[in-house]
Image (cartoon, rainbow, N blue to C red; front, top):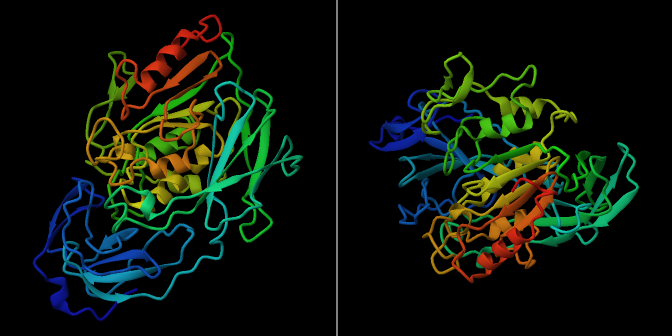
Length: 454
């Protein structure tokens, strides 16, 4: 609730580019002066004016808001859907738009009771050679030397435990703005451990955390990976260029309003009873001559509004995966969160995918918006990562690289009848380069009688 704003603050002659329900989804709005945003407690709210960073976006403050909303009255209420996070937050009111914002006031602090709890649980294949393993990872506020993964084949009965190793990164590990400037927030600690001795298609229940302040997560589960075999079948979910979406229609950096379509339809198969699909308007389903739905018509993901909130339904109901429905592996081939230098967007993305990534191996490749930054070692591209240069991606998604170096994200693994090869488009693939030699040797080793699909 806000009140007492002078009328002239609402009438400042400024325009903003915002994305709100309606058509077109994103558009310039004239006379938008007042707005309110959420910020980590203690944020620097100084006006820094427009910057020339390739991926930088307003509001131009020393600390970018996590999310924000435009206001059309000098008093009233505005609703935010706030997800539990590792930091306390405050709301701040501004006038004069987002290019040269004027700070009018800040709310009391919104504090969470579970700041230290494990978050953003995900799993991934841990080895190209040992198919009986699974890597389990998560994020948490604190460094904890006793963090572990507890697992078993019965719900609530955890007969095994594996220690997890922590890592993190700081501002000096990143390569440039906005990641090192107004998009920077202190990263959490990232924990990771490898569970071994898994049996194919066996259901394993697990929790992560410790007996210290972190505590333990709720229970998740996954299935033991399928061994290589031409006689088995595999359900693969593959996509790219996804991003994330705040479910309360907040404004935020690099808006991707339809990313929840991808997430929700991966979690809930297209034929899941009781799930209402979002309308991809004006992207419509084309029909074949016999009247059957075939594919989506081309169109921009930022034009037209979503007509439902499937992700909110996911939050209201515990996801119960059925053996006959679950994907065996998710392959996200680059352009993952579109955080591009804005750390808070990684938190939103990891929360959005957890109903999937905690149950299904989530295998990633780096794209230009994860890796590229001038002078940082990528072979093509410009400053598309917003100064991240792969560091946040590599910390969150350790992959089974043959070099055991996450900066070289190229690798392979076999699962069921498929041999997967993950390449890195942002690193050299010229003849005799490290990646070229890896791909060449890897393809030569494939036995098509075992994995006929590549």
